[in-house]
Image (cartoon, rainbow, N blue to C red; front, side):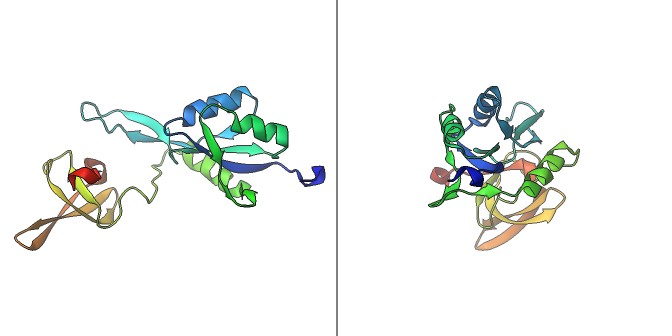
Length: 175
C-alpha cells in the first residue's frame, strides 16, 4: 500500500479460544485502539447463578489500525492473536457505524442476544427447572427468553416451553 492509502479503520481479529481478554490487554499495553464487546449473562455453572461478563463474539475482537507494516506486525505478534479476518486481498475493514452501534449496545442496561446459540434441530438437554433432565430437539424461539423443545415419544412429538437459559446443546457424542 502506498502511504497515502493508509487510513485508520476498524478490523476484526480472530483470537485463540478464550484468549480475548489476553489479546485485549496485550494490545492496550501497546497503546492500540482495541474494542472487546462484552455482555452480562448468567453463569452456566450449575452450582451458582451469578452474572458474569463474557465476549459478545467469542474468539473475536476489534482493533483500529492503518495496517502500516510495523503496526500490523505488532498486532499479529501479540500473544493469542490468530489472524486478521479478511479475504485473499487482505483484512476487511468494519464500518465505524457498526463499532459505534456495538459500543452503545454493550453500555446499555438491556440484554443483548445473538442469533447463533440454538438452531432448529439441535439436540438439547434441559438442565434447570421442572423439566431438568429432559432430552429433546430445539424447535424455535418463542420470544422473551422462551424456547420450544420437542420431545419424541411413541412416534409423536410433545413440545415444552422452557426458559432459553435452562437448556444446553448436547455434545455430538451423546446424540
